[in-house]
Length: 424
Image 1 (cartoon, rainbow, N blue to C red):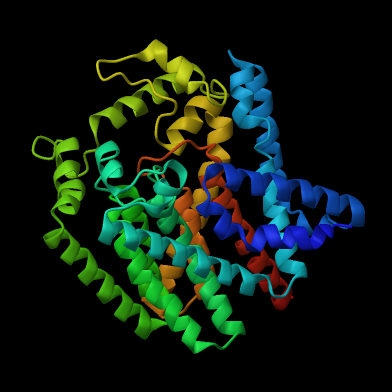
Image 2: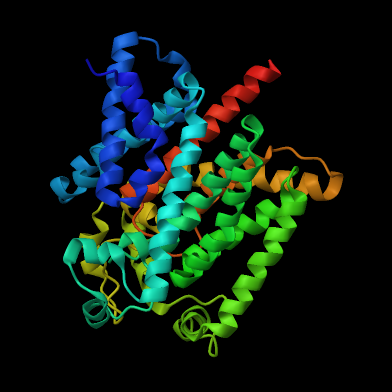
């Protein structure tokens, strides 16, 4: 007979490896974990301690999305995003349950990250030195010559093959990896393994640069700068790491022409830097935002329903063709599709996290007092990256990025619950 608890334990601690296999596998693991946690709760009937006000608000938010979809102009299309969105709340519970009842969860989770990153490094370096993507070859049979002719892409994609998501994966998972490294260090004193793990960070940063994903590069820099400057226990290694990453970044700008063109030249030309200001963003994104804002003005409180931007934008076509599947910004998408009722809780959540991190930074600078532990600081920064409002993003309902975000929430919630118990 299958042990549901151990199966759930396996699904959750091996989640970093599932992320490597792409969106479908990620959503499959999230869905299976959600189903398992329901069965486990029904079996033991002991679930009250896992629910708090934030999770209840999330399930109310999910119900609101479904109701809004039912009253949209295309309920079937809209329900594709909203009907099972609650699965992320169940996945949150699944991770929380696994951490609580399996003391080696963080150890196995850390090992999964190490293996995932090792696979990324090996496949990426094969691609760099031999101009040959191993993943594409396994799925298509294309050799190096055919790959260069068919794809002709200067970006490094590594294990993700034709999907341009290497940088996104690295930048979004790195704070969680460092948090697991810190927890592993505190519980298992294996210095050799820690040095290997730390060595991964500059290598992965270099691969992140070669992915040419500008948002991912900014996210990585946000994390590494904030953590290195404001952690408590790892000052020496942090400043050494920060200095090393600075050398890698500046060297890449000067030595890799395609990287310089992508990060600097393309950015300035898209933002019309000469004519406008340094804060300019590409005109096409401005068009998307304006369209989303106009849709919002027509449906201020409730929006038009999940995934309906792609239909409503046809009524707001501009010279730049401002119609797309989504407006490439979480907050503009929520305003347009879920209105103020959907926008307010997400915004408040982001502001609460920003407040906690800002208060910590202020306390460190002014009083040399650390309010947040190092591993929780990593997780808070991960949440900021997951909800960051000032860069172009994918769809708010993307199962891949949502799974990473709710994984972070679960680990953070567990640490907070333990903290409050100690205080009491």
